Image (cartoon, rainbow, N blue to C red; front, side, top):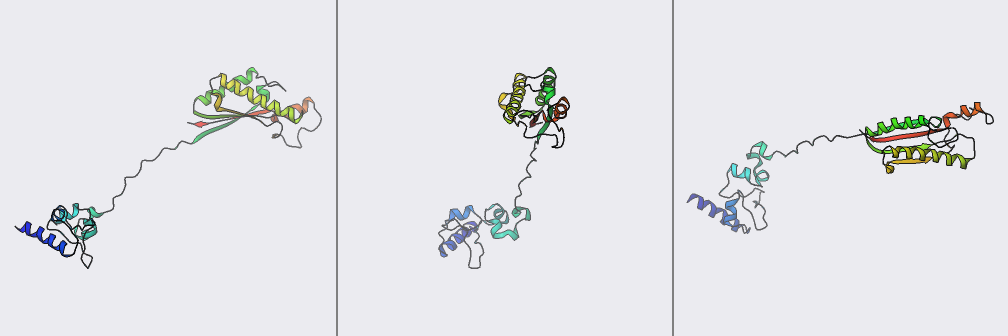
Length: 219
């Protein structure tokens, strides 16, 4: 009888304030729910409780913390914190730039690989196979002797010869990028290697005849 009286009181109260709450709905919740599916409140902003209200019922009610936070255990209304995300392992690209003297790869003024040059490239292939390869960049250079157009072509041919050899050793062709810089990026200083073409000056300009190879990937 007491339970029925409580439910009846809640329903009568809801009807009196024009909220249209049903007895069944009130019985399922710790608070009176109006026809807008919101908790009914008094003129003082207090939530109307149903006859089913108990601290335990309020703790399980979606509106419990908003209506009766002070009466509920602190942990019930404590903000839920997301578990810390597992640290994401970052893999930094491993780049290694290798500068090979063109004389070690080719005969002077040539673009055909020498046996010594192939041996050096074999070492580079071993390094590339030890990582998850992204790209290999081969850039050919030339010294100042010869025309700009000739040196440009020579530097491109040397870079292409390097690519052809790397591909023959199993490196994917689309992972090898080649470029020729001609004589545009000398290593020697302007005041070095002065004079007309001679063995001494040619030897002095040897650092400018080079192929720069950069291997980029992840370990």
